[in-house]
Image 1 (tube, rainbow, N blue to C red):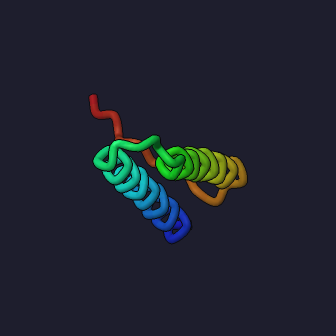
Image 2 (image 1 turned 120 degrees about the horizontal axis):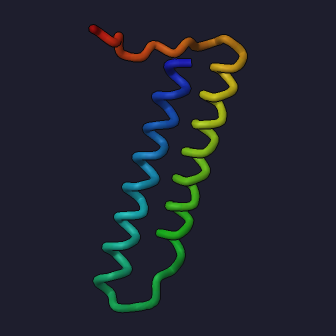
Length: 73
């Protein structure tokens, strides 16, 4: 499970990097945006939603347990 979450975060960050690359490349040339940035951001949103749903399902199935910060009095 740790590897899946780490891979998902790497994919999300890579998608953000590609979106930045397309934004900078298309902005300098002064032409219309090609859609590469839109595709990269769509992939990022999809990965984020899938990661959230997988974490929620893993919690419901008992694979992971919540471990919040202890409340001290």
